[in-house]
Image 1 (spheres, rainbow, N blue to C red):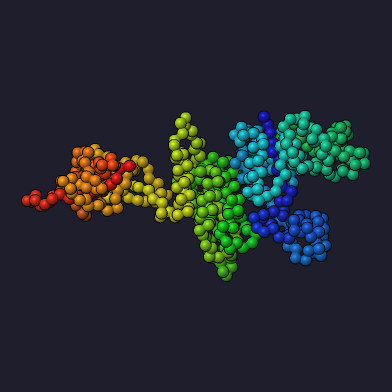
Image 2: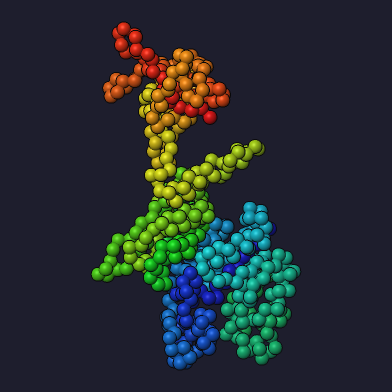
Length: 493
């Protein structure tokens, strides 16, 4: 099934200059001294599209005036297109601030037309733009519906009925001939389609008929698809100076949306990203503040990255106002699709646990979330080293650190910070109750290069049936008259 989404951004000029994440001022955008876009406060003051500069300033003396900048509009439209690549790799740019998306192969993945349209609309809101969305079996039909106010049509017959009610002025080739068309009573596309084709072609040209045929599926439509670059780096210039770090989250989310589209288009997953907070330039210039996120598990979705950035920004105190953001994907790898098992692992998947650790690191800091790394040492106190959870430990490297002769007795998961000396009652170690030895001994002699340890370890059981890991110091005296000392070193679960 071939299906297209058309996105028309009618307020693109205004939203490029006045992003929605800032307090919307009383602003207008001018082109050749005439108003072409108006903010809500300016509209409430009486400013209308088509007014001249002087008339607008008379109605609203504090009006903020912005000159239209086509290069900035083109950059904004390209940023929207990059974000839409997360839904399909087939995204093309149409005429008059319109994007066309071929979603036929993506419907099943995203749960149907309605669910996919909701996802596209949510992405547009996250980017901070207003868009008129349409859906049609042909690209030109979706373009016309979007320019005509939007709507979803799935069949060709329904599309033809909807298109026939649209005005002729929506077709760019028909606009030079609107007076003539109005004179002969041809006001809609349906009436235009009913005119004799040879005479219409001689009068208005072949481009008009080609556009009509493309909208009704009678001709082949060719497009130049937007390609994702080899690397990702996106910048966002803020509307005003931002002095609170948490106010930067909306702008960061907009850049994350673009990166998500780039990752999906390139079939990549990101492992490390950098968000640069750019400060003022000039005599008070200072280097950008860098926020770097290192992920335990690569991801290509923006929800988890947004949570991590929210935690980092909440703890950040800005030393200077921020005027721009720059997001860069520093390290990526090919995307690995998720694998689902018949019996899911309790407590979530490995990726869920990795995301939890990353969230804890963002909230508590990398020095407060640690993991055990095996060390090549027989002594229990030295057998593990606690390192940051962000440090990756390969299973092969961990196995290489284990001693060649593994102990026959199990080791507890909880070691005491310092071994506890035990009392002796009736020649048995005592810890709340007399302890009964449940295993043979495991002798450990190591540390001759620093601090020699000679111990015999045992598993013991108390009256409450809890299991303890004890050791007895070997007697070093020649006469053997000294009493052996017992210590509690670990607890079993």
